Image 1: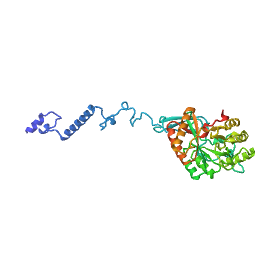
Image 2: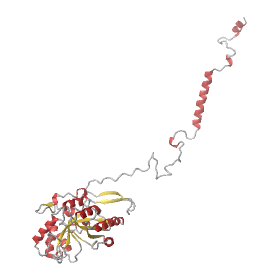
Image 3: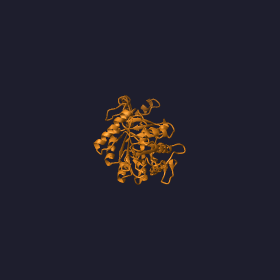
Length: 394
């Protein structure tokens, strides 16, 4: 009955609550509260942390941080400050001048990076095809192919010349003669001598066509030696088909054609002996006129002060070169080096110098080593055509 009285006195809408339930908190409520507090705590920690994860590259590294401002020469891999240096482009095949970037080695003298401006009108043949005769420059004859001007006016002197820089520095041209006489000596000379050295072939030699190709493939410019009458001939005899003062002009031209037809791809001829012949106007005039007609240069070895070649070459439009000294009259390494050093001194004083030698083993070895050192001193070794006086070019 007591319980019924209490129910009557309780306000409407309120359920009966056990005394224990009034002071009890459920386990789910506790877990929810803890979870909320954990989230709030973590969020606060993140919010209060200095420089949160906005720049991952700056977080806890084992090496000091390097900025672009502190190390401009070593830009970051993520953001290079300087673009990589491109390789030198292949010169465009145009008719205008070409700018070629050249990388030089340490100790060469010029800076590591140099620029050479090359004019395509400069004399010179593509060395990749230097051993192939230009059919337009060949005239058939009973003795073999003769050099001749092309119908468009091109000369063997122009077409078969080895390219060079065209610079105005000290230049030395060296001609080594007597090739094709000794097969082993010829092979050694072609292999050892720097490509800038000009080679002269003796017409009496063997396998000249094969050696010409080998020489041109190695980069050498070549000339053909022609035997001319010396004083005290025939006691001193240059060899077969020597041009002589006593012979008629036709006989001498026949002997000249024999020598010229021994091979192709040469820029000119050089005398072999000939002190008497070169001093005789009646003998030299038809000879020089024939060279002018065929577009060939004449290289005078400089052994005779009585030679009429300089004046006749100018008259007949023949490119002309005169040797300054014989470099190996004495077969001694020290003496040869003195002559080569003399060429260098002359080139520095006059701009260019020409040395003449023969294909002796000692000469070849000495010239090869000297050329390598001379280049380091700023001397340019050039083909013989590079120092020729060409009347047709003013």
